[in-house]
Figure 1 (cartoon, rainbow, N blue to C red):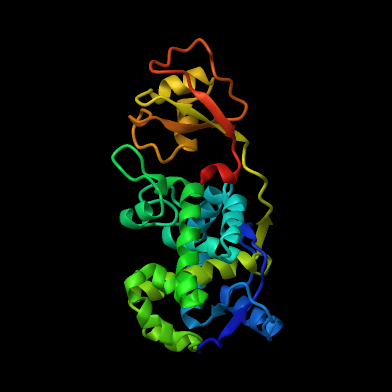
Figure 2 (cartoon, helix red, strand yellow; figure 1 turned 90 degrees about the horizontal axis):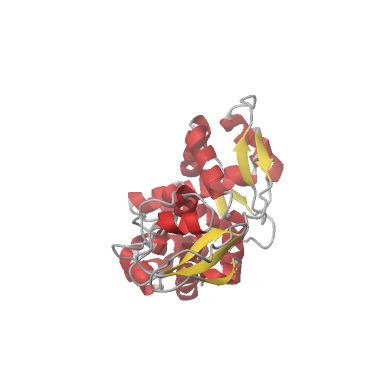
Amino acid sequence: MRCRTLILLIPLIVAPVYAAAQSPSARSIADKLQFQLGQPHKVPPFPLVLNAAVQAYVDSYLAHSEGLRLSYARSAPYLTQMTEVLREYGVPSDLVYLAFAESSFSKGGAGPWQLTKATARELGLVVNQFLDERRDPLKSTRAAAEYLAQLHDQIGDWRLTIIAWNTGQGMLSHFVQDRGEDFDRLLDRLPARTRSLLSRFMAVAFISKNAREFGIQEVVYSQPTPYVRISVPGGTPLSKVAEATHSQVFEIQHLNPAILTDRVPPDGYDVVIPLSSKVEAATDWGDGAPRIISAISDKTNR
């Protein structure tokens, strides 16, 4: 039986982790939620829709919950700051779940938001053989937020914004006429890849917002571990950075996913180190000692 379309308009970001498997089936819970929520709220942050296509992804995610659980775990140190960046650009914080739908929140490859190299460079990110700032969760989120805001300014509809995000700005003119269109009819006209992305995004958002209803334990994300940026000369081995800051190489690599080699890029780079680290003054840095830029807040990722 085809699911009745349900619009969910809940403004809070909730990031869940799975508890013991003791909940009812996803289908029965979805039916229960449809009955309970009924009428939409008046001012939606993002018009989430639970239809047959989205429900299929909800069922799939819950049936294979380990992958989604790992995605939530990977996002834990960054989610709070990411949603702050989105709101700063006037982008609904719900759109943080687009990164989950795009990449399962991976920092590898093209990063959480899966920006193309060309788009990333247009938005100010460095992408070359030494650096790929698409892999930096906060820098790439700022770029993604700017791009999403630009698209929305042109098209005026957040669902169509995601479609244009996936198909490219060149297709914007094809979607303007669909503003306010019935969601199921709109999905039917989309390319399969775009239809899948939009449905995955809504499914992840739906699960996250209704964690308890699915027998999922909610997690309150704490602030990320404090850290600082230091300006390090080009060519410096990461092993030397780790040694001089009393850190481990894997810590430096984890905090700096944009660095693609075992050395600081030739032109130098502002390397992230734990706030608790102390820069060893006696270290021979070659071309010059590093200097502390500042303690990290999102503003330093501009």
